[in-house]
Structures are given as structure tokens and as C-alpha cells.
Amino acid sequence: MNVWRNAEAGMGLLGGRAVVMGGSVAGMCAAGALAPYFDEVVVLERDLIPDDAEHRRGVPQSKHPHFLLNAGRRAMDTLFPGYEDALIDAGGMHLMPSMAAAHCEGSGWIPRQESTMTMVYASRLLIERTLRGKLRELRNVHVVEGVNVEGIEIVGDAESGGRVTGVWATGGDDGPDRRLIEGDLVVDTLGRGSLVSDWLVKAGWPEAPVQSLDAGVTYTTQWFQKPADLPESWWWHQLSVMPTSDTGPHPPEHDFLCQIFPIEGDRVLVTMGSWGHPMPRKENDFYDAATRLRTPVFAKIMALCEPLSKVFVTKSTGNKRRRFDELENPPAGLIVLGDAICGFNPFYAQGMTSAAKSAVLLSDMLDVELRRGQALLDAAFPQRYFAAQRELLDDIWVLALARDQGYENAEGTEIAPRWRQRIAARAGWPIFNLISATSREDKAVESAFTAVFNLEQPVTAMVTSPRVLFGLARFAIKRAVGRNRLPIGFDPQADPPSDIYRDGRPQPGGPATVLPRVQVV
Image 1 (cartoon, rainbow, N blue to C red):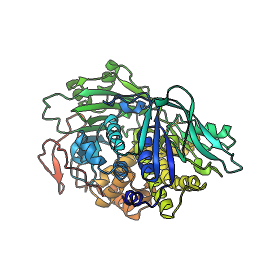
Image 2 (spheres, rainbow, N blue to C red; image 1 turned 180 degrees about the vertical axis):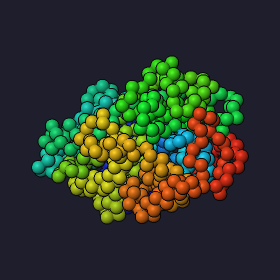
Image 3 (cartoon, one colour; image 1 turned 90 degrees about the horizontal axis):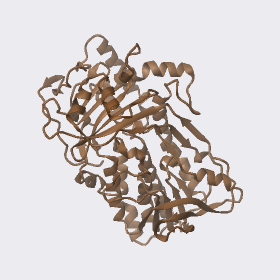
Image 4 (tube, helix red, strand yellow; image 1 turned 90 degrees about the vertical axis):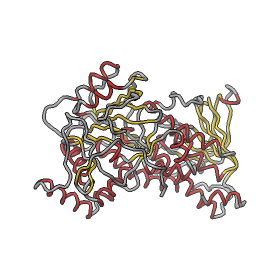
């Protein structure tokens, strides 16, 4: 990155110390963005982090699958060059889902074929541990564990142009006494439970408006060890079962979205989630629910594996966005990113990528300030950052709410009108299935769908593209008259077929393979 050369060339820094509140993925990405521009970056982390990266209180989601989307992995590799290689060296798997996964959607198992989409699969524990290893390579970053953040220091007020100048904390290296850690820039990555907005209100700022939508998503996960000898029918690495499109009477389990998700160490995370349904919380109930899914394959695979954990349950899945961009005069010296500013339903795998992209945006904007010859960040920098971040988050926010707004049980400020809920409830999954099926036969639709799924392009670009809309309409007509090249779906009661389709014709296929190293573009 040019910025590292700039700093080494003595072009000047933007401050003596930056303080990051929170040391999870968002905090580490923020620290990586700040390191080239400040003499010192101090990261304050509440938890004591074990070397073997066990689950910890501050990251309850670590027990569940985490898709590291392409935009996120590339952002992390931009902040920490070599990150992707390090993640794969540590056990992450680079896979092509269309070849390495068995997907049950619509009418059944979809055909297997090559595509342009690839992903790196790993546990949240490994993703964080690898990031932490790259962070340790930055000599001016100091992570202090066991710290409780208790407030922020503010000079002045909203009317006089106040500035955040530090963080009040206890614990960590300096013991239990309350102390002020001064900083020229403070970054809030304290997650959904951040109190920074409340602290600003007490100091005289208006409350940042909050948008919210909670569709009552609950999901449960259990960890398993794969058997040493896999049956021939288990050719895949990942298995997913999408909710049924059937609007008639059916078992509630047919509404579940389910994953058998591969991670390092020949382990899999078995997950079931739903919108509004009660979910199993005990091991026996978890397996019993699996036997009632749309396909018997799910439970059959679970029976072959060795349980490694209890069943973990998460209900904190609402979408919540704090609109710091709408404050007329946000305090100088304060940046907010990650779940602290916009927390998404984790079912959609957008949180880590959103945080990493926001950190890259911060790095890019700091680079602009450095090139302008700024000695210190001016008071208006946070306002400029929040305005730019708004555009980034708007795209992801629209995508997150599109599905969750379709449920009558949804609560919050962003509830859709009843007529839109009815349309979304009836058409949501059929539309998804149409896009998915079209993408298997139309390269333009596949490219657009891949870019949207990986948060590389906004969903509005896809749904307003004449070429994409034409492709969807053309495929719908072809399917209606039986002219589609690939089968729509295979019997979900049978094992997913391993045949690989090339030029519309099936060829015998073998076990899915792990791809070579990622090529960052």
C-alpha cells in the first residue's frame, strides 16, 4: 500500500495516538487502518483472549457459521497484506460453492457446475485469530486486554464544536483504577451494546436517530467432528437447505434455513434457523428437528458425525443502525464503525464485511488527509467520514431489510406496509430461487448475483439492470416451456447427485476439491 511508503518517507502523521474501543473484527480492522497514520494505536479489549482462540463473552456469534464474503476478505487483505494466505495456511478452505456444496432450494437439489464465485471457509475463531496474528506484526499497535471502557472525555460541547479527546477505562495493564487514555482520534467498535451515543447525549449532543428491524430470527448451532471414512454419497464440503417456497400447510421445519458448514480441523457446524419459529435448544430436540426437514440427508449426516458441543442458541439478530451521519455537528475526534453503528441480522453474513469495508474507507480517507499535508485531522473529518460511510452502509442495509421486512412478526422503525409484507412473504423465496436458477444458465445474471451476494455491488444495480431483468424474464419463459438447459432440481428425498454439468450435460463427478490459493483482484 502506498500509505506505508508515505509514512516511512517521513511525509508526516495525522496524530500521536489513536484509541480503538473494542478488539473484535471491527476493532482489529480499524487498528489496521489507523496504524500507518498515528505514532501509536491503542486497542482496548474487554476480554482476556486465550492463545487457542476459545469462544469468549464478547463474541457470542463465534459459535455459529461465519461466511467471509469476497468483499470482506479482500478488505482484510488490503488492511493486512497476506491475510488470506495466512488464513488458508491456518486451515481455512478456499472452495467454489457451486462445485463444493450441495444446495437444496426450490424443488430440490440443484445441479453441480463450475461458476465464478469462490469463498474461504473457516470458523469465526480462526478468522479472528489470523487477524490478531497480523495485527501483532504492526509495531505501533498495542492491544490491552481485560479493559472496561467506562466513558469518553469530551472538551467543549455540541454548540462550541466539542471534541472527544480520550477514553476513560479501568483494568488492563494499569490495574483497577479509573484512568484517562488520551487520543487524537477515538474509534468506537464496541458493538451493538455501545454506550457512546448515550454518553454524547449526556454531554449535550442530540441523540443519533436509530433505525431498527427485528424479524424474530433465531438460530441454533452444534459443532461436530466429521467421520474418518466418509460415505461415497458425501462428496460435498458444505450442505444447505433453503426454506420451502410452498405457501400451503407444511411442517414448521420446512421453513428453516439450514447449513452444514465446513471449518478447519475436519469439523462442521450444523445450523438451523428460522424467522419467528421456536427453535430446538437441546441436543435431542436439535436432532429430532433435523429429521423433519425437507430432506432426510441432513439428519443422516448428523448421525454419522461425533458431537463436539452443546447446542448454541442466538436470538440477538435484529438490524439496528445508529445514524451518526444525520447529526448536524458530530463531535470531532470520534469515528464509529462495525456493529456500533450498523448491526445486521447475522443470518446474512454481512457484519464482518461491512466492518472491514468501513475500515478500508477510513484508511482511504486518512490517506487523502495525509496527502493534503494535514498535521492533524480537522474538526469536520468525522462528518465527512460518516457521510461517505452512509453510502457504503445504505447498500448493505437495503439488502438486509429486503428479506426481514416480509414477516408479520417483525418489529422496529422499518416495518413495511402490510401489502408489502404479503408480497414479500409470497414472492421472496420464489424470486430468490428464480435468480439462483437463472444464474446457472446466464453468465450476466450470475456475475451480478455473485457481486451482490459478496457485497461488491449494491442490490439496486442488479434489480435495475436491463440485462439482468431481461435474463430473468427470458429464463422464466424458457423454464415455463421446458427449454431450460439444466434441471431445476433433483428429488430432495434422495442424496444430492454428484454429477457435474458441463455444456448442459451431466458427467460423473467425484468428491469436491479445495481450490488453490486465493488470487486477490
